Image (cartoon, rainbow, N blue to C red; front, top):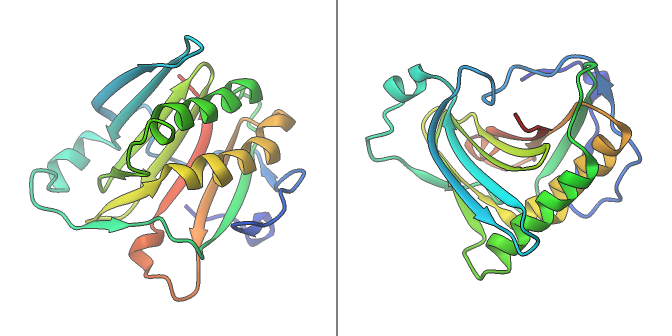
Length: 201
C-alpha cells in the first residue's frame, strides 16, 4: 500500500499520542475485502458478556491455491521493539467503528489472551489476515509477506497500536485507521504487514 508522502506521520513506540493523524478519503485495498475466504473462526465470551470473534481469512481463493499453505513455512517474529510506525486515518463518508467498541475490544483482547496467561505472540500466515471483532470494531493484522508466517505481539497492539489509532482516528469520527511499520536495519520481511482498525461487518 502506497500513499502520498504528505499523509505520513511516523511515530516510534513510546512516543506521545497525537490528537489526530493525517486523513484521506480513500481506504487502501486490503486483505479484509469481500473477496477474502474464511479459514477459521473462534468466539470468546468476556467477563462483561461481550462476544470477541477471532477470524483468520485468506486474502482470496487464489491465496490458498498459490501460496502453499499446506507446505512447511518459515515463521518470523515480527514483534520488534525498535520499529517505528506510520499512522493514517481514512474518512470515506461511511460510518466507522465507535470508539467505545474499540476500547472494549482492546480490553477484551487483554482479558482473553494476555491476562489469561497465554503466550503473547500469535501468528498470521502469508497472504492472510487475522481479525479480532467486538461490536462495531475490528482489529486486523494483514500479512503481506509472500512466503513467511509472521508472529505478532498482543501487548504491542493493546498497549500501543490500538490506542494510537483509536485516539488519533476513531474518536474523531474517521472511517478507519491504518498503521504500517518501518525501521532502519530491520529485515524487510519483518516489516511486510499492516495493522488496521475498521468497522466490523
